[in-house]
Image 1 (spheres, rainbow, N blue to C red):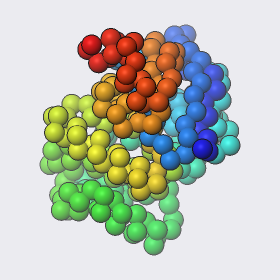
Image 2 (tube, protein in one colour):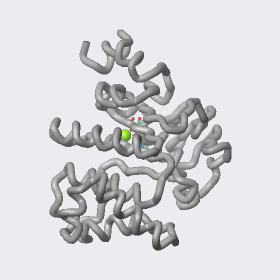
Image 3 (cartoon, rainbow, N blue to C red):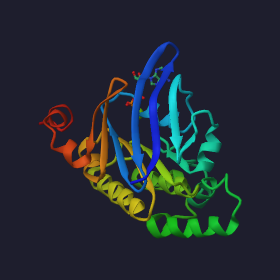
Image 4 (cartoon, rainbow, N blue to C red):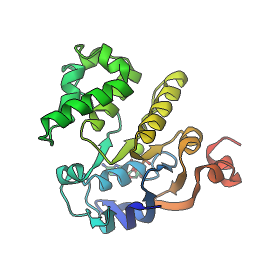
Length: 237
Ligand SMILES: Nc1ncnc2c1ncn2[C@@H]1O[C@H](COP(=O)(O)OP(=O)(O)O)[C@@H](O)[C@H]1O
Ligand SMILES: [Mg+2]
């Protein structure tokens, strides 16, 4: 296995309140990795720090062996670390196609962008059917698919997702998780942040449980699913 991302003693504070209190974990290339925990545990803060959108107060983030912890967000995107933001953040008054094209803003390889678009349409055919519609007219599930498709247009190596299943009906939740598995099979590594602990651990090879800014459990997804502590705290057991 090859380590793709190594996070060492990462701490992130809002003012004087430390939300992430020195976490360390590694992601292996080719994996789906889940970071799960309750509301307020520090999941979004962690992802924002990995993306460079929040400054770490301590610690280091290495991607493919390079220290990226002091890079600007666009430089991190160019390295191949691309986040699907929480709440989707699609542009509702632009078309589906325009939203997708925005995802490729940092690329200059015109032919590559065109083939990425074909790959996104193959993976998410509903976006192709709706390419000329305003994004604001899509259903919640379709908007989530669009947010994922837009991130894919940046040609990521590692896709970061912040609660992609949030607010979706169960059938759409299933579809989102199936899509993530398909994306992973196409060769991308995935870091998935979820409050839907059961579904996330089901598709993840490796998982981490975060509580009040600290990683308290680390194991394979399967082992965590079978862990009585996870069961009691997150699976309603
Ligand atoms: N912009 C902010 N300003 C101050 N505190 C924040 C801010 N965003 C999050 N927090 C706090 O940081 C902690 C972690 O939040 P967050 O990373 O959003 O958790 P999660 O994504 O796991 O729900 C929480 O206590 C939250 O209240
Ligand atoms: Mg969050």
